[in-house]
Length: 229
Ligand code: CA
Image (tube, rainbow, N blue to C red; front, side, top):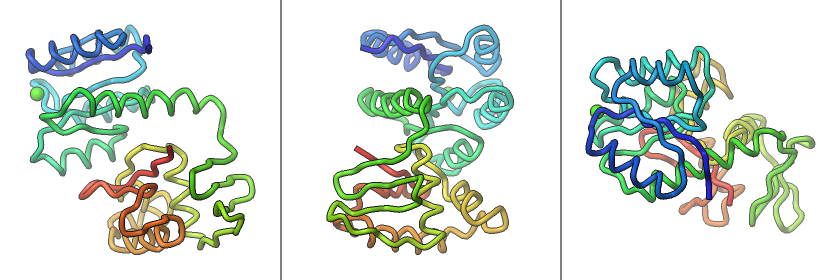
């Protein structure tokens, strides 16, 4: 059961129709737009719970559209992008998109992304004081992490910065640039190798099996997300 409202912005009529049918069957309220202009018109009148946005639109670059929307709205955005357009996806995330799926995709993948975003939206009303996983607890008041054996896990200031930033939106994909800018500062925005080193240190401290992480997930060529389940 959902009842959440969506705006699908997609110029491919067949895909737009298939998405509408599938999402309506799962009780989403679906509105559609076929261009950037239509999308902006629709958003001016009503704000849906989530925007699903094809990056390849006929009238405007999808990334420019995100930048425009972000000037006035924090609506969650999932972008749809072609498989060979990795750079475009990173640009979209840097511009403020929340997540992406790569075409062609299965409806289950999109539904999973939607669930993560909607769950996060509901939780954002109350700021979390701690996050409990099967292996450790993150305590934001005490700035500490405790293993499920009761032992405190020592993090460096940088490692804590990374965890705190990723945990601000569990499940959300952050680009390397966003993490570096937030934790280190703008001057370090391109220093992805440094980030990789710190993430692997964090995995050694937090993950039961650092080589196959289940919390600190790498999205290859894109960034990282903290998965809490
Ligand atoms: Ca398109």
